[in-house]
Length: 222
Image 1 (tube, helix red, strand yellow):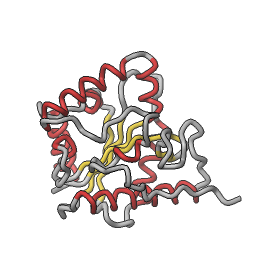
Image 2 (spheres, one colour):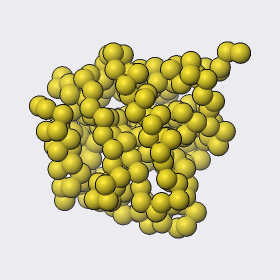
Image 3 (cartoon, one colour):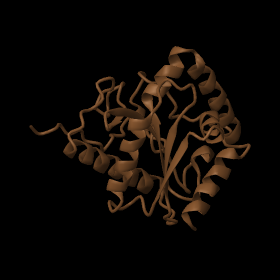
Image 4 (cartoon, helix red, strand yellow):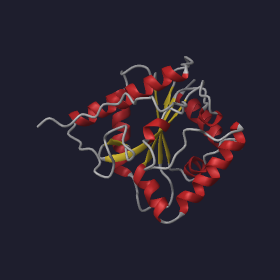
């Protein structure tokens, strides 16, 4: 599948009636969904390419815009990873992106906690806090089930802006209702920011209280 074909395939997935995330639908419709296509999620070969794309996206975020902006990293890989294998690969990529960030001298965003077990954890890259959404062929949640592995980077500060003007809760209610209608039950991993670590939601796999996030925060060496 060519780069353009894969992008088009994902766009059609988002446009489908069943896809529940109205925020993603809005970003796609308004031209604020950006794409990067790389090879495989279970290799570090393209980590620098991903980091550069996230860094560029972070620098260009328009936090005054009412329109959601999102970066979608599509992996051309077709190997159907299990949920656990996808989760491991996704966190490997996140760890490597963080390592590159540290080497680049980028400080962790002061508005979020670097401890993945903390209630106010959010991934920080290029000084911007991100909520990561993982999709892959073997996800147990239909809304997260796409033919290729995907990592979506959403700005945490954008969500906070939506929350401040009252739009976030309305959007959240719509998405959760649509997701429940699609799957037949509510996603057990959904939670509001500040109630529990959002790291538990990134991969889409249902985890229990014994789950430990593999991410390890590193400080910049002076």
